[in-house]
Image (cartoon, rainbow, N blue to C red; front, side, top):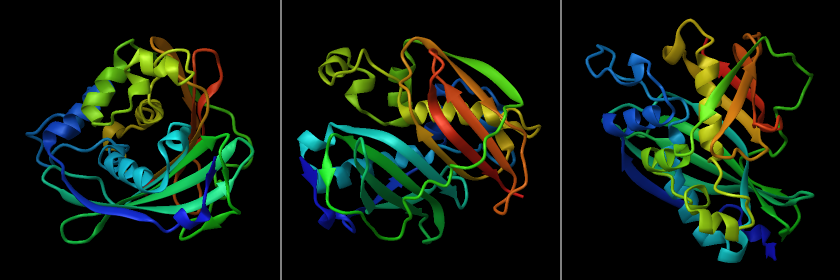
Length: 287
């Protein structure tokens, strides 16, 4: 099985989607959030979106683009490997957003073919809202020589070691994958259908990578005095170990440090067996 470099530059969209308070609140609720910023529609500033909410409106474009570029046999071998999100602003109730997805990079890696989809979302006036580089590894799949447009595949999360200054445990109930699927509107049967998960070679259904990342982001923001209102500029991470259901995830991180882009918070999430489910996590806060 092989992916041709000719897929680089292929696009899907734009697709228009409406964001309302119901969707924003449901996503926060799925993550166990309780902060009034996510739910109190009487706030003068209105409710805020969870920083990882863009994955919700990006998912349909990822499916559209995969259908245009990959065979079913290859697509089922994909695992979410890296995630880089830039928030130009948070989505808001009443937004009508247009998202376009493009195959921005294809590269041969030891485990398989590494493909990056760039998701660019603008509002009704054409102003940027979010930009995401969504990296997937297609295990045991070959590809042509590295090719890319508009994105570097060099992982920026690598660097000097760091020591966590805080740590907390998060319970992952047996129903979380089902709740997250419906509230995020992200459906992949390996997360909710045990028969499908087992047929794909998994030990059982597993939690979505974006759900694990969102839980880690929530815990990281709670370390800031501003909590849910903490302004986030960007998020980046790599994914690793699977998170089983039910289980517990340990999130740990570091106090903000100075960086060229702004205050930088490093974090990670460990699965119940101690292996990193989210690694090289970085949040850049707005100054």
